[in-house]
Length: 106
Image (cartoon, rainbow, N blue to C red; front, top):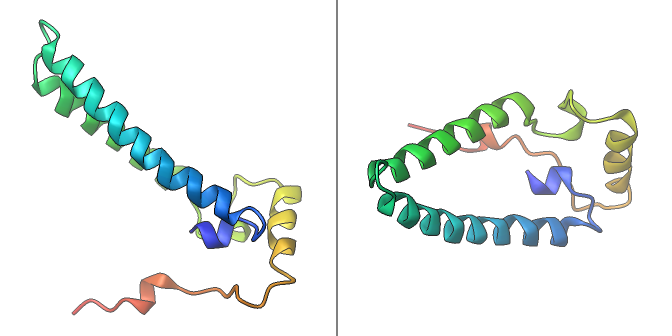
């Protein structure tokens, strides 16, 4: 996904942001779950409810806003789409791969 959306000059920064964000999210989630479990009236189940609701909200947002490539997204301006697509015109290593069909389930 990042290789299709991030111009080559910005790919390393976007990758770092993504992977660091996952680590920060884990630390924040673990810290909040301890606080929620210790809160009178909420208790330990609240940690599971909150993480489940956040995961559900993220899934809905992903289904609504995500796209395989900038050319197929309804939520990207024409200028931004053109900038991203033109950034790949000088690179020969970028090729479109349909990842769903490259993985066969038996």
